[in-house]
Image (tube, rainbow, N blue to C red):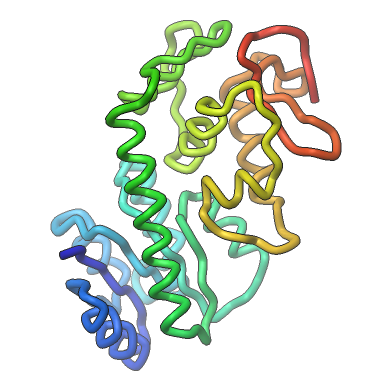
Length: 238
């Protein structure tokens, strides 16, 4: 039985989510305080965290930053009463797997949770038994089995979501991938009219992987279409 941690400072929200999640077959832990939630994450390792943005103690963003800085790879779905694009993009940049805004429908929450589990479990299975374990492109080495990336033998520190994006592009290197394809496969979510999160992550990857991010050798922009990870390091692109 999968364990879900519900973190929210509103008792009515905790009651609503806990009842419906347990009814759907999940084991539920609840917390109304950010620091307590972080302790639960570190000691009980839930399978997914439903994390409210505004919390006493530590807020949701601080918890997410702490998790990712310690490489705690637990799926996180941000929950907030605010529908501000800045919060959404920032949360996803920090490594949130999805984002849902109050008021929400329980069916939508359950569907999103199932989608997050499908995506994360699918990526884990691919990493455990990849068709090819290591991809070498120029000075880049991507070890799909060990979840590691290096440039000229020096490890590159990527966030979980940056790695997921690179992993998907590496498995499809040489192909032009639209922003919508990347959103659906890496974030497993349809951000209608909002693909900026892809551009932000591509920019971060270039900063970490390219010697000159303004003249990238590896991650190319295909104007009007999307992006492509070159299957060989030649030339330059935008």
